[in-house]
Length: 406
Figure 1 (tube, rainbow, N blue to C red):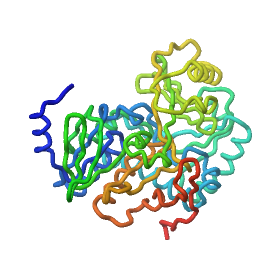
Figure 2 (figure 1 turned 120 degrees about the vertical axis):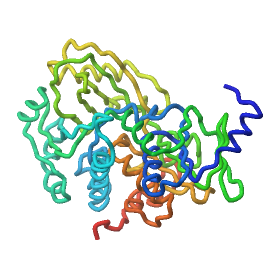
Figure 3 (figure 1 turned 45 degrees about the horizontal axis):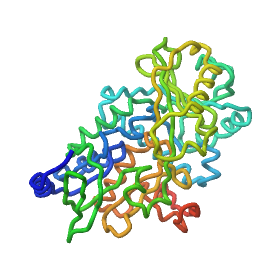
Figure 4 (figure 1 turned 90 degrees about the vertical axis):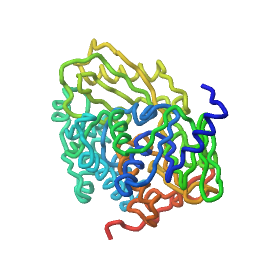
């Protein structure tokens, strides 16, 4: 759609905001929500290249898991006990804030618990070993034997599991839309941002059909951040995830399950549809980039997994297949930072497949940063300054972090 000289001038004259948020996923909408909660008089805009929740926030399975993309022992080895503990608590806060702040019926919030399921004997041993350190940080976990795990899932071939009583599921698209609505922000959809430039004491945000003036900009673009700010490409890389949905069936899965070290994830939707994703680990080189497409290789692996482990799924028709682009960070934890050459502007990216698990709480953190809090709780955990040598492929995370509980 083209825009006339008069329309562009009119939109530029009328569009003045305190904060413009680029990106209409969970993190961007949550940032607007928390800005409104703290300073309701602020004029806030959300600018989205497609529609609200059209990206990864509306394409995932809707798990509200706690912790990182790995098992807790791996998180301890990779990040150290302080970082691993702090991130686990951050994700638990995310889940609890969603339940406390929002009307869960609007997005099918279900506090059912969740299962982290071992696909091998070695993984089973790691899950058992993780029980003690998880309980030490307040995680409500129970180890289930292989027999009990398969009974609860009406499955076969799994080893043991951890039942996490605080796990929950949502309709992720409805969640994002609800957060956007309650933020009271001005929402501009189908407006990909072309440039952000300094203009005196403010910034000019330009799309194809609109100009906005603002004091601050928040870039909540996750995998798409390098497309707008190429200088930040070293902090996030695009990785594709694929999912499928089957025709509705009887209620077999009472709990969402995250299996084989997160390589597969499965749940039933409110209407009885089986939602299954994963198998990316078998096609790692192909599943990189921004192409929104499914592949026969991954989809066939998903169907084989479904039929191998869930006998009751035999014969179920697959009714939908889709993909989504996730943003992976160099060390598996999200990254936040200041925008180079744009004082006051901030960004967040690299949620590594677990944006639902921390996105609402991350919005609270970003809002605090925008409002001038020097060290909002959690910022040090995610700060880009933890990396040395920020060139693509050469990033290394520092181990230094203060204990937030001290």
